Image (cartoon, rainbow, N blue to C red; front, top):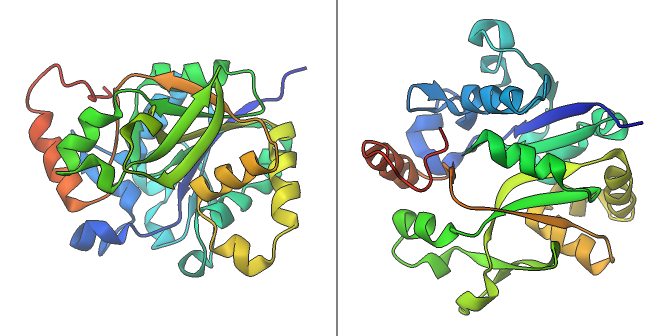
Length: 256
Protein backbone atom coordinates (compact mmCIF):
# COMPACT_ATOMS: atom_id res chain seq x y z
CA UNK A 1 0.00 0.00 0.00
CA UNK A 2 1.40 3.38 -1.03
CA UNK A 3 1.91 6.03 1.63
CA UNK A 4 -0.05 9.27 1.15
CA UNK A 5 1.58 12.20 -0.64
CA UNK A 6 2.52 15.41 1.15
CA UNK A 7 4.76 18.37 0.43
CA UNK A 8 6.94 20.29 2.87
CA UNK A 9 8.27 23.74 2.01
CA UNK A 10 11.33 24.77 4.03
CA UNK A 11 10.72 28.47 4.70
CA UNK A 12 12.25 29.13 8.12
CA UNK A 13 15.17 31.34 7.08
CA UNK A 14 15.16 35.02 6.25
CA UNK A 15 17.04 34.99 2.96
CA UNK A 16 19.44 37.75 3.97
CA UNK A 17 21.03 37.96 0.50
CA UNK A 18 17.82 39.58 -0.71
CA UNK A 19 18.72 42.48 1.60
CA UNK A 20 15.85 44.91 2.15
CA UNK A 21 13.44 42.70 0.21
CA UNK A 22 13.24 40.46 3.28
CA UNK A 23 13.36 43.19 5.93
CA UNK A 24 9.64 42.87 6.66
CA UNK A 25 8.75 39.48 5.21
CA UNK A 26 10.32 36.04 4.69
CA UNK A 27 11.94 35.15 1.41
CA UNK A 28 9.05 32.93 0.30
CA UNK A 29 6.70 35.94 0.15
CA UNK A 30 8.85 37.69 -2.47
CA UNK A 31 6.68 38.40 -5.51
CA UNK A 32 7.70 37.59 -9.05
CA UNK A 33 5.56 37.48 -12.19
CA UNK A 34 2.41 38.35 -10.30
CA UNK A 35 2.58 35.89 -7.39
CA UNK A 36 4.73 35.21 -4.35
CA UNK A 37 7.23 32.34 -4.48
CA UNK A 38 5.04 30.52 -1.96
CA UNK A 39 1.89 30.96 -4.04
CA UNK A 40 3.64 29.72 -7.19
CA UNK A 41 4.90 26.65 -5.32
CA UNK A 42 1.52 25.78 -3.84
CA UNK A 43 -0.15 26.09 -7.25
CA UNK A 44 2.50 23.86 -8.84
CA UNK A 45 2.42 21.21 -6.10
CA UNK A 46 -1.37 20.99 -6.20
CA UNK A 47 -1.28 20.79 -9.99
CA UNK A 48 1.08 17.82 -9.59
CA UNK A 49 -1.52 16.08 -7.42
CA UNK A 50 -0.26 16.92 -3.93
CA UNK A 51 -3.12 18.21 -1.82
CA UNK A 52 -1.52 18.35 1.63
CA UNK A 53 1.20 21.02 1.92
CA UNK A 54 3.01 22.13 5.07
CA UNK A 55 5.22 25.20 5.34
CA UNK A 56 7.92 25.25 8.01
CA UNK A 57 8.13 28.81 9.31
CA UNK A 58 10.71 30.68 11.37
CA UNK A 59 11.67 34.25 10.51
CA UNK A 60 8.63 36.56 10.86
CA UNK A 61 6.49 33.44 11.04
CA UNK A 62 3.28 35.38 11.69
CA UNK A 63 3.42 36.70 8.10
CA UNK A 64 3.18 33.14 6.71
CA UNK A 65 -0.47 32.85 7.64
CA UNK A 66 -2.74 30.66 5.46
CA UNK A 67 -5.87 32.68 6.18
CA UNK A 68 -4.24 36.07 5.64
CA UNK A 69 -2.59 34.91 2.43
CA UNK A 70 -5.73 33.09 1.24
CA UNK A 71 -3.66 29.98 0.54
CA UNK A 72 -4.27 26.35 1.46
CA UNK A 73 -1.43 25.02 3.62
CA UNK A 74 -0.61 23.91 7.14
CA UNK A 75 2.21 25.34 9.24
CA UNK A 76 5.02 23.91 11.35
CA UNK A 77 7.37 26.18 13.29
CA UNK A 78 11.13 26.12 13.75
CA UNK A 79 11.49 28.62 16.57
CA UNK A 80 15.29 28.23 16.67
CA UNK A 81 15.64 29.01 12.96
CA UNK A 82 18.31 31.65 13.57
CA UNK A 83 20.62 29.09 15.24
CA UNK A 84 19.99 26.19 12.85
CA UNK A 85 20.34 25.29 9.21
CA UNK A 86 18.02 23.70 6.68
CA UNK A 87 18.44 20.08 7.83
CA UNK A 88 17.27 21.04 11.33
CA UNK A 89 14.26 22.72 9.74
CA UNK A 90 13.54 19.50 7.85
CA UNK A 91 13.54 17.50 11.09
CA UNK A 92 10.64 19.65 12.31
CA UNK A 93 8.53 17.63 9.83
CA UNK A 94 9.53 14.31 11.43
CA UNK A 95 5.94 13.21 12.06
CA UNK A 96 4.93 13.80 8.43
CA UNK A 97 8.08 12.19 7.06
CA UNK A 98 7.51 9.08 9.17
CA UNK A 99 4.01 8.62 7.72
CA UNK A 100 4.01 9.97 4.17
CA UNK A 101 6.00 10.18 0.97
CA UNK A 102 6.96 13.85 0.86
CA UNK A 103 8.23 16.27 -1.73
CA UNK A 104 10.61 18.60 0.09
CA UNK A 105 11.06 22.01 -1.49
CA UNK A 106 13.32 24.92 -0.70
CA UNK A 107 11.23 28.07 -0.35
CA UNK A 108 13.21 30.17 -2.83
CA UNK A 109 12.78 28.07 -5.96
CA UNK A 110 10.18 27.88 -8.71
CA UNK A 111 9.61 24.86 -10.94
CA UNK A 112 7.27 23.34 -13.50
CA UNK A 113 4.58 20.81 -12.60
CA UNK A 114 6.22 18.12 -14.73
CA UNK A 115 9.37 18.33 -12.61
CA UNK A 116 7.40 17.37 -9.50
CA UNK A 117 5.68 14.53 -11.35
CA UNK A 118 9.01 13.23 -12.66
CA UNK A 119 10.47 13.24 -9.16
CA UNK A 120 7.44 11.41 -7.77
CA UNK A 121 7.92 8.77 -10.47
CA UNK A 122 11.46 8.03 -9.25
CA UNK A 123 11.32 4.67 -7.45
CA UNK A 124 14.17 5.33 -4.99
CA UNK A 125 13.30 6.07 -1.35
CA UNK A 126 15.38 9.25 -1.54
CA UNK A 127 15.57 11.10 -4.86
CA UNK A 128 16.51 14.57 -6.05
CA UNK A 129 16.02 16.41 -9.32
CA UNK A 130 18.83 18.14 -11.20
CA UNK A 131 18.98 20.51 -14.15
CA UNK A 132 21.09 19.44 -17.13
CA UNK A 133 20.74 22.97 -18.57
CA UNK A 134 22.12 24.55 -15.39
CA UNK A 135 24.88 26.49 -17.16
CA UNK A 136 22.39 28.74 -18.99
CA UNK A 137 20.85 29.77 -15.68
CA UNK A 138 24.16 30.20 -13.86
CA UNK A 139 25.57 32.40 -16.67
CA UNK A 140 22.55 34.67 -16.36
CA UNK A 141 23.12 34.95 -12.59
CA UNK A 142 26.89 35.40 -12.48
CA UNK A 143 29.93 36.06 -14.65
CA UNK A 144 31.71 32.83 -13.73
CA UNK A 145 29.37 29.85 -13.22
CA UNK A 146 32.17 27.84 -11.61
CA UNK A 147 32.41 30.40 -8.79
CA UNK A 148 29.16 29.00 -7.39
CA UNK A 149 28.35 25.69 -9.10
CA UNK A 150 29.22 22.46 -7.29
CA UNK A 151 30.01 18.95 -8.43
CA UNK A 152 27.11 16.77 -9.45
CA UNK A 153 27.78 13.29 -10.81
CA UNK A 154 25.27 10.52 -11.33
CA UNK A 155 25.51 7.09 -12.89
CA UNK A 156 22.54 5.11 -14.16
CA UNK A 157 20.12 7.37 -12.30
CA UNK A 158 21.91 7.19 -8.96
CA UNK A 159 23.77 10.11 -7.42
CA UNK A 160 27.47 9.44 -6.83
CA UNK A 161 28.85 12.88 -5.90
CA UNK A 162 27.44 16.27 -4.92
CA UNK A 163 28.39 19.54 -3.32
CA UNK A 164 32.14 19.85 -3.86
CA UNK A 165 33.88 22.89 -5.32
CA UNK A 166 35.50 22.28 -8.68
CA UNK A 167 37.15 24.04 -11.60
CA UNK A 168 36.41 21.04 -13.87
CA UNK A 169 33.08 21.58 -15.59
CA UNK A 170 32.99 17.93 -16.67
CA UNK A 171 32.29 17.06 -13.02
CA UNK A 172 29.07 19.04 -13.18
CA UNK A 173 26.50 16.94 -15.01
CA UNK A 174 23.78 19.22 -13.65
CA UNK A 175 22.83 21.25 -10.63
CA UNK A 176 20.64 20.13 -7.74
CA UNK A 177 17.47 22.22 -7.70
CA UNK A 178 16.34 22.07 -4.10
CA UNK A 179 13.61 19.45 -4.68
CA UNK A 180 13.77 16.12 -2.87
CA UNK A 181 11.43 13.14 -2.65
CA UNK A 182 11.61 11.17 0.60
CA UNK A 183 9.55 8.08 1.43
CA UNK A 184 9.10 6.92 5.05
CA UNK A 185 11.81 4.29 4.40
CA UNK A 186 14.09 7.00 3.07
CA UNK A 187 13.42 9.19 6.08
CA UNK A 188 14.30 6.31 8.39
CA UNK A 189 17.73 6.12 6.74
CA UNK A 190 18.21 9.87 7.09
CA UNK A 191 16.99 9.90 10.68
CA UNK A 192 19.31 7.03 11.61
CA UNK A 193 22.26 8.99 10.25
CA UNK A 194 21.28 12.21 12.02
CA UNK A 195 20.76 10.43 15.33
CA UNK A 196 24.42 9.44 15.24
CA UNK A 197 25.55 13.08 15.14
CA UNK A 198 25.91 15.60 17.92
CA UNK A 199 23.06 18.14 18.13
CA UNK A 200 25.43 21.00 17.34
CA UNK A 201 26.58 19.25 14.17
CA UNK A 202 23.02 18.68 12.96
CA UNK A 203 22.26 22.36 13.63
CA UNK A 204 24.99 23.42 11.18
CA UNK A 205 24.23 20.83 8.49
CA UNK A 206 23.08 22.04 5.08
CA UNK A 207 21.20 19.86 2.64
CA UNK A 208 23.94 19.16 0.10
CA UNK A 209 26.31 18.21 2.91
CA UNK A 210 23.68 15.81 4.21
CA UNK A 211 23.24 14.26 0.77
CA UNK A 212 27.02 13.89 0.40
CA UNK A 213 27.29 12.29 3.85
CA UNK A 214 24.48 9.85 3.05
CA UNK A 215 26.35 8.77 -0.08
CA UNK A 216 29.42 8.08 2.06
CA UNK A 217 27.21 5.87 4.26
CA UNK A 218 26.15 3.86 1.20
CA UNK A 219 22.62 5.26 1.04
CA UNK A 220 21.07 5.16 -2.43
CA UNK A 221 19.91 8.52 -3.78
CA UNK A 222 18.03 8.66 -7.04
CA UNK A 223 18.76 11.44 -9.54
CA UNK A 224 15.99 12.66 -11.85
CA UNK A 225 17.16 14.79 -14.79
CA UNK A 226 15.16 17.81 -15.91
CA UNK A 227 15.94 20.44 -18.53
CA UNK A 228 15.31 24.06 -17.55
CA UNK A 229 11.94 25.51 -16.49
CA UNK A 230 12.95 26.32 -12.92
CA UNK A 231 14.91 28.96 -11.04
CA UNK A 232 16.33 29.90 -7.66
CA UNK A 233 15.85 33.39 -6.20
CA UNK A 234 18.92 33.67 -3.98
CA UNK A 235 20.09 37.27 -4.38
CA UNK A 236 18.78 40.69 -5.40
CA UNK A 237 20.78 40.30 -8.62
CA UNK A 238 19.02 36.98 -9.34
CA UNK A 239 15.65 38.62 -8.85
CA UNK A 240 16.43 41.55 -11.10
CA UNK A 241 17.88 39.32 -13.83
CA UNK A 242 14.81 37.09 -13.81
CA UNK A 243 12.35 39.98 -13.93
CA UNK A 244 14.16 41.32 -16.99
CA UNK A 245 14.46 37.92 -18.71
CA UNK A 246 10.79 37.04 -18.16
CA UNK A 247 9.80 39.96 -20.39
CA UNK A 248 10.95 37.93 -23.40
CA UNK A 249 8.89 34.78 -24.19
CA UNK A 250 10.62 31.46 -24.71
CA UNK A 251 13.22 31.61 -21.93
CA UNK A 252 14.60 28.15 -21.19
CA UNK A 253 14.05 28.54 -17.44
CA UNK A 254 10.56 30.07 -17.40
CA UNK A 255 8.69 27.70 -15.05
CA UNK A 256 5.16 28.86 -15.88
